[in-house]
Image (spheres, rainbow, N blue to C red):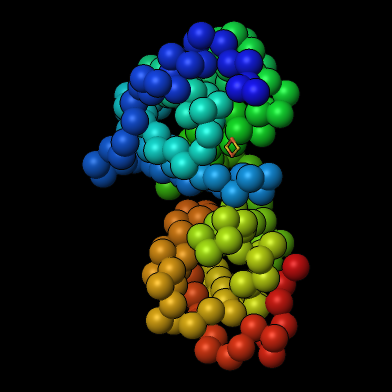
Length: 221
Ligand code: FES
């Protein structure tokens, strides 16, 4: 039986607004859902003086609910300040969409998390982070939980690809249980760099690959 989507959801799903990448975005974020393995990318252009979002777009690898939510949040975020965009809530979005089925809540939360992560990415890249907590192994681990392992559609930590994390004097080293010539090695490395490099006190990120068999390697959980 088809899910009871509202006409507004169906409209945004069939004719999504602001789809695609922005060339040279000022900020971007890719978030994955641990619940279903789908992903959403959000791209932003921001006015550096007013901190208003001047352009926003998305790419979704999720379901109808996810595409519709991502589409409507791009419309709502455009013209807002970073603070206003971060304050958008799932309840507001769901109301604007005429409601969402309960089983699809995580899909729309994923879209909103992606917008917030893109705003945070801008703040980190432009020295706008108010609360400057030192980067620790736990901070890095949490960020790696937002990097998807494209082989299985779950994050790197959950799929036991992270063998070791070290943080010292602004240098972060992430060791992976993955061959350097693996088809996804370059993508995974880039995603790790994108997530870790913007941290305010990090000035060097290294990703190491390990050629040994998974069964021989310790992992970070
Ligand atoms: Fe994955 Fe909706 S089921 S985003």
